Length: 357
Image 1 (cartoon, rainbow, N blue to C red):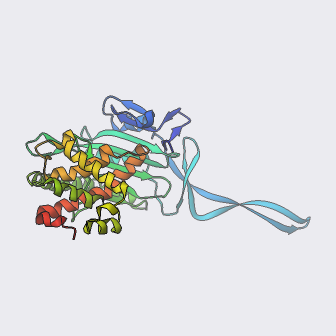
Image 2: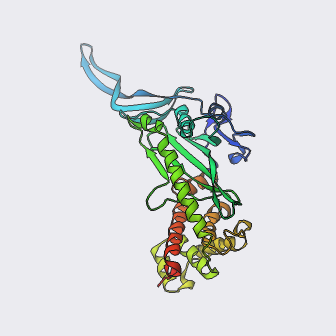
């Protein structure tokens, strides 16, 4: 699959826009200035609506009447199910139940606008639609930053929202900080708080979607806690051997690999795993972003070695696969969370956290 961006036959454009950055697969629109929500909807080709329509199926049978036996076709309504239809091109983009409530694309952008009370607070960076327009995504930058060290190491605060019109998933808003110098996505969940808010497409979804202060409160609390955590980690020194052990444990794919690590059976480790660890360790040692005072030989650097590997080293078949892996609960997000948890334990208990046997 080269890409799954929606192509709008009506406009002759792909449903995607980005600010300044290269668009996916060289498709979609690149704009130079941050757009308003209304402009972003048009740039991304999301200016369509969806409506629920009764679902019918064809029935066929033989009936007996005064003329004898007769074959008839009939149209039967399917109870409790509806087709979701794009009104701009009359395309069916999903089948949903009777309780499903549509959240229009404009409502999703209104949700973002209300997070910071409208105005110039939200900066829309990317948005688009996949498939036939049944799934949309929006990335927006929030005001202010997470600062580590003397202030030069800055992490910007983003919220990523995705929703669908086909009944395949909930409305999901995720707080996703991105470290500027290396574009690492540091979207960790703390033990007492997830970085994700999920809202079901039920009768109450609109009401809860409008309750945007919940997401802003999540972003603010996580920002404060992550800033404190990262600054603490930037002061904890980690040796090269400890760095590699942490990377090995974070990237460990299964119990068999962990068993080999615990028993020192390096020769029994798969070539793929060893190469992955070597690439992440090399990134930790030589990447320019890993030579800063906050990251060189520090626990914060160890965490960034894992996130940076997935963001800047690993190859993906396309940008959608990268997005899925890093932001939407894929391998990169899971391994990065494992690295975060290991670093938390290291900060609390020291190098004994990394003892494998």
